[in-house]
Length: 386
Image (cartoon, rainbow, N blue to C red; front, top):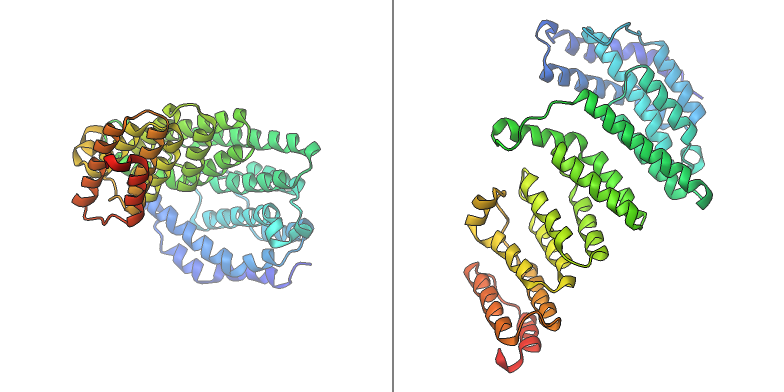
């Protein structure tokens, strides 16, 4: 049941503070900043006047009723070019209304819409209408993808293949969408303030949806989907300069390490992320990578990471961002990797002693105290030689 207030709220939104704010924007000088102002005004008006009615809807039918009332009060421009401030405002309100409908259906297991069941048919109908009205943006695809993934997680074995196919098709459609609306990419080899801003913008726009898709593929726990996840990762970071979320990077590290017989794939991931990161990863990221390396018993790889962390010349040589300072956990993992290398007979006891002495010197230079359990670990693997 739609609240009667939604009808008058539509008029109130147009005649409220939003109207006066819109009138202050000079359409003859409309640029990205002013378009962002209109988006912000639209967002505030939507949350105040319309969102409560959507949030009170219990199923797709009620969402449709609320949406219909909103649409009936909005004008429909014949073209999406040269819109007035009010037309852009209404266009944004409609997009947010569709997003509210899709979100309620997509996150049904969390908000109890449709008795907690993801309604794929309704999501697809709302999405199709969004496309026909030219309302689709990256957030639309993100919400639909989340709904498909939630539906996949709740499906039976017989439905899983069909939902998976929907997810793959949707993501391919998304990539064609951003290729058409965001085709220009500067040459990142020549780094400057412009390209840095571009990389930041690309990650802010697209990281969430790429991260969700990669995480979904990894969760399927088979080599073919993991290979696809790795391919998507290198595509998004190498072609679009989009750095996936830290949680996604951690997941990829663990999955690659678990499925690989050597450290080559893991090392490639490490260097690629450092090359394309516009801000230095936190020390936990380096610790996660060191931990993933441990199974391979190649202590020289751990030393390489340690040098990246403590030797400034590495940042200039590789053009990496400034690395964080190692912490006690970093050195604990390094010593654990040294023990693994010795257990795999990759290092002699004499070489192991020299490597341990080098690592301890780095701790001393950084004024990091050496916990007692590290000395115990050194004695266990090096014995009296230590």
